[in-house]
Amino acid sequence: MFHVEQNKKNLHCETKDYLVSGQNFRIYLDKNGIIGKTAPAPKRLEMNKYYQSRDYYPHSLNKKKLSAFLYHISRIFMHKKKLMWMKNYINPNTKVLDYGCGSGEFVKFLRGNSVKAYGYDPNIKSNDGKSSKYFIGKEKWKKQKYDIIVLWHVLEHTYHPFNLMESLKSNLRKGGKIFIAIPNFKSYDSKYYGKYWAGYDVPRHLWHFTRKSIFKLAAETRLQVVREKWLPLDTLYVSFMSEKHKSSIAPLFLGLMVGFLSILSSFFTKESSSFFFVLKKL
View 1 (cartoon, one colour):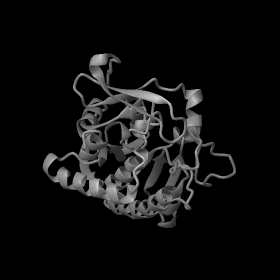
View 2: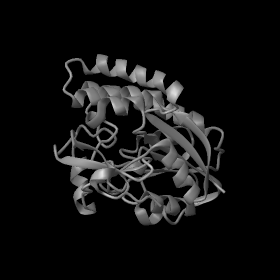
View 3: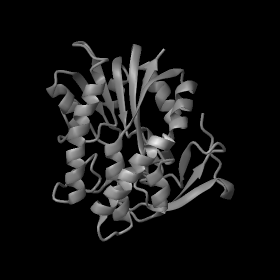
């Protein structure tokens, strides 16, 4: 379990919600400095309003904006990469759950590639008439077993990541895998941008992870990390968005420069801006 005391000694930084509200928030770290927590955390019933923006691309995509266009291109690329990484673990009978699936694009992509995939997102009603027909409700997904569960930049949005991992593990078949992607606040671009770093994305990101925190989470939930990879495309996109938070006059150019420096730095520090992990049920 992660324990984070909210005191001056453990204060990591002060930042704000650049997307929706403009409200100020603080991030505190645990005593080991490997996990961060957003404060004050909005109550569950209030959280939905922080996702109500046409610029929050996992749920809505306004392609007229440059940031949205870049997100769209990177999303198509990552869909193909994720499927490629799944190839070693899937067969015709494999069942996949995309937990926190947003608009359901990855679920549709998997279905288009003959993978039996389903999507669940706690911030989207499965019967709203706009969602994918492969969306399933909370009670339904909990009653099924899966071979792969995907948490792609989702864990940081959850109130109780440890409890969620325990719950998801119980829905895995023997030898099942959990795919996790997280932003890493130990990266070069995080340190460079400080309070402007887009990877913080408060208050939607309630928790802030590092590579070590995922290994700790895996150990405490009796899961084994069997694969990890850097996500360099995330680095470039997050750096671009961070420049926008700074109101830079050339966010794309400067973001690409800082992003490439961060990628280069990762070869020496092993601290990528984003990580991808495969966790196996023992």
